[in-house]
Image 1 (spheres, one colour):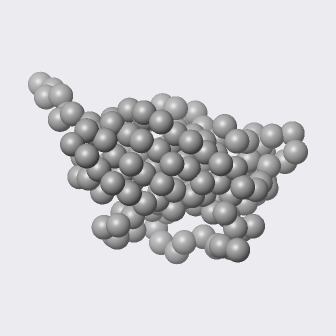
Image 2: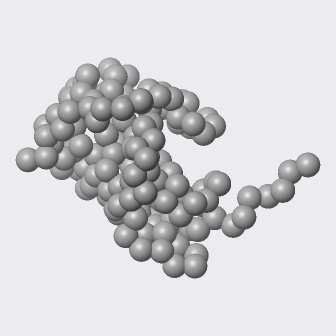
Length: 146
């Protein structure tokens, strides 16, 4: 079992502006300084983020993975901004109870000229919570603004 405690470091608010993430609330990020996984995402599961059974809602876990995998891939590839999610497949392994701290673990598996293939997991106090595979479009250069 991959039981974790909160990764030590300087966790803080998201360093990018995303209104959907703001609506979800509570997501934090940690810049690790590691070229293989330069950023991790974390969240303390709040009551309003839980299903009626008292566990983090699967929709939130999917959102968390989409953001964590996408942003980490963008950081690894050195892009200033992201491309769209082409595919996200999530397997829910066990519940993350209210009050639990969950974190992302992300691996960039492969890139092509136009795509990024990424895998990742969410871990919490009970161990692995969910796993995902994702396919993201490589972003085009950012538009020039005057």
